[in-house]
Amino acid sequence: MKNNPLDGFFHYSAHGSSLRTEIIAGISTFAAMAYIICIQPALFSGRMTGTETGMPFGALVTTTCIASAIGTFLMGFLANYPVGLAPGMGTNFFVLFSVIGTCAAVTGGKIGDPAVWQTAMGVVLISGILFLITSFTKLRRLMLNALSPSLKNAIVAGIGLFIAMVGLKNGGIIGIEAGQMTLKTAVTDPPSLIFFTGLLVIAVLRHFRIKGGILIGILISALIAFLCGKISFSGIVGLPANPMPVVFKADVATVLRHILELLPLIFICFFMDMFDTMGTIIGVATSAKLLNQNNEIERMERVFAADATATVAGALCGQSTVTSYLESAAGVEAGGKTGLTAVVIGLCFLLAMFFSPLIMAVAGYPPVTSGALAAVGVMMMQSVSGINWDDCTEGVPAFLIFAGIPFSNSIIGGISIGIILYPFLKICTGKIREVNWFTGLSAAVLILYLILLNGK
Image 1 (spheres, rainbow, N blue to C red):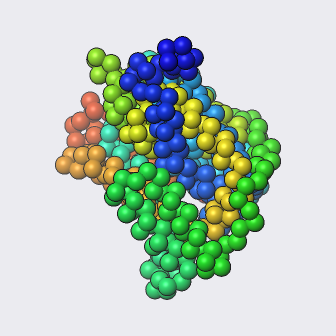
Image 2 (image 1 turned 30 degrees about the horizontal axis):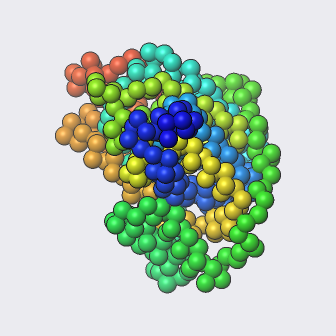
């Protein structure tokens, strides 16, 4: 219909799509990324790790949906791209395990104190503002080239291995005895059965390219947990929980008082968001054939601005970095071409808030999401293939990042040792020209970070 106002705004007909196709594509992408609604509240409330953060579980369910909807609407209306946004896997673990822990150290508080997580949200908020500012400047391209592809891929793979390790712990597959990780032999216990069932379902569904495999795996795991008497359902549909306990709580003032210690964390959040966005948009735009004649992504500054604004909105909602999801490829495969697909995804997130009783029951028992965490880790581990192992000046720092993150149980720790070594190794091997000023600055800032936090 030529007079359709939706087509007039999104131009889906000009891209060879239709209203029906865009709606189906939006639902397909939502099904592929909806697992975050279960994982994010369980992670940030502390239920997944057994260490309470002080953030209410119910409020996090609501704000996960709100932040995801806001970010996705921005991408649809501002950039007209068929991309869904939500709190990013990888960055959420970084914020929980590195940012919150560091904020506790520098403020003298304890994890669980409201001041600690509020300071962490201040870190995320500032990183989003920086991203928004650079979205419209030439500095954006410089930032994207600041780290070598090997280091970028090592960070993704290392965090993926770390996420998988959490899944194995929650699934009762590995345990901690005398400070050492050991294989548990009680594989017939309910947590292990739930883990293996969920991971098996997800792997099989992914093999057959069935959309929403992770979400389906979580729901089947929840069914097994219910049959084992580990969870109970008080209902399926209900009013969303009050989001206000975590909304507008970001503490920027405290961040500024401890800016030297927290500056590296701000930059890492900033970089991870930028790299995630660029990688996702390139993949989605290529699949949807949205590149121009010069093989470039059109409206890139709008894409970055939408993603950055989503991070700012997410931090104000008490969420970690909100970023573009590679699962958006599911919608592209279904024929999605424009921002109308993104609008449909956002509407689905808002609708999901009214299923909070079901989500709280499913995500409240850590083994239910353990198989999904392992599956996400597997997907992120694919980045290992992008590391240049033949060049020891690339491979050695990349390995230190990749192995250092899970072995040190610290994402910022693993990233630091690799980035710090990188420029020194390049200089000692006569490859100083491969070290740009920003890489050297990053190493210097991380050295300062480790010195300032020594003993805290």
